[in-house]
Image (cartoon, rainbow, N blue to C red; front, side):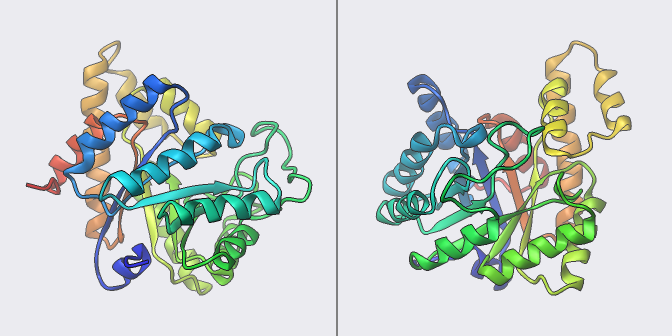
Length: 293
């Protein structure tokens, strides 16, 4: 492995990355490649393709991530969750990533197979927690391992301090960097970093950004993730009425303003949840003056 996101940040570099949803059809896959090509000239530090809900679309995700490694000069980060797989199956997936040239893995516990309102149940013969998955990935070769972090706390965490301790356990298991769930208040991110730093977490924590393109969709995602969609921000968007272009423009403005604050106050980069659409992310980059020439 010749490049590590964690080492890049440790040496003072900024990480700018994009995350895509896994397409469910061949048409969706072609559309995704179109988006990837549109964002390619921004020279992202890495790109990633998620699993679908409950671990669905896993095979397509793995194949697409390998294809990015083999057919482009982009750095892919392979997603991996504990959902729906035994320890042996997870080891096989990690080995498949390695064989495809994918040496960065985002290790996640994943959502409960029965839905977010259901209690977490591990797969028979599988893993219970993300730190176990980090150890498994680390044991299979030379990987840089990323994990999740939660500015407003994981929905199952008893407290924000307990949530920070979970991130510390992931670091102790071998995690090299973290990516946060999306959020809408920069202070939530910096409070997370402070909590984590106080107990010994020193891995880079990349803030996750999701520009608003559709108010009802963002509200749904926020509810699912436990993130807060602030009422005053919702009011600003709702005041635009049925004008989708105005919503997108304001989404870019709001995201760019928060990103500027994050970078100015020391965030090690930005991770964009693109929703498989390039336009808003491109616009945010232009607003920040980051677009490659």
